[in-house]
Length: 398
Image (cartoon, rainbow, N blue to C red):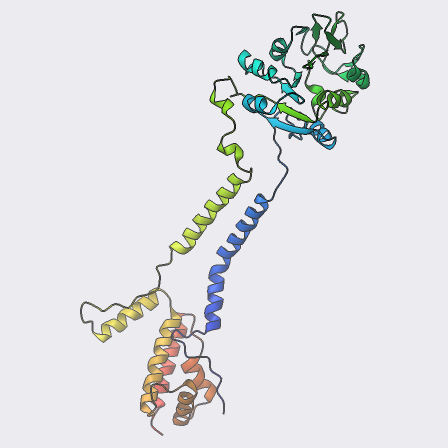
């Protein structure tokens, strides 16, 4: 006769049942950690940098200029996008093109003089004050947005304007000397007026009164793309400068270059936030554990009966039916083994065989009483205690 029993366990459980219980307790935190790790990994993957700045070369919206920048890049032009005049002055030099967009309300005259002194070919878009510092051959004239969206023809001899044929632009520029070539006049403009002007020389200065032809929405309209690409693609390197609102003066801290935050990848704030969440989740998960129970000598002698009752109350309060059942079964097994003359080290198979011979009960019944699964409620624990008491009363030395 063979008896298949699990290894003797103090609380009535097996290694497999403990593993299942631990898995049920840990699977929720593990799933959360895995999801956070996947989100952090996806956030750290390289993604195309984009912005929402108007006319920025990395802005894919209608008011951005990413389309023009990408076409220039495919044609071999190296586009450098900067927001500080210190960076623009450092990168621009002879043989490069410096595009300045706006900045009339931000940049001081000293800053504009630094930009002009770089020697780079200047392309000024909607930058009236920069135009007045760069050359005295052209000045702004006319209402800025009186004829927005009207298609204008070249009507001049400039090759870039002739290649474009026509553009959709507003605003106006007025030639003051014969050194300036002004193209694309609007309806009713005086002679020598238009939306586009060129002053050729050692430092070529190109001006466009309206920034709309650069935008993604209007680049494909009329000859806007031809004019913009020829205007910005004359050299192999283009410094695309849009002044930021805090780039106010040559002596300001803003001209010192980008701060530490600008040097970090865009995914760093999101990854840092996820790491904080992981730390908080780990603290909540592990902080509730009090650690392993440590045996310590009692400072006073406690009667065994009081200790037993106290332990029973603890088991009942925590509803630890497995521990309580294990204690009842261990006591019953020890007393039965003592009555039957077995050693304390006797294994479960030997003890079950001896109890079966002494009581005449079926093997499966004895095995279930001494080494069965733990009860799940108070009623089951009470029935187990009563059954073990009856079993003990039937055990006598054979």
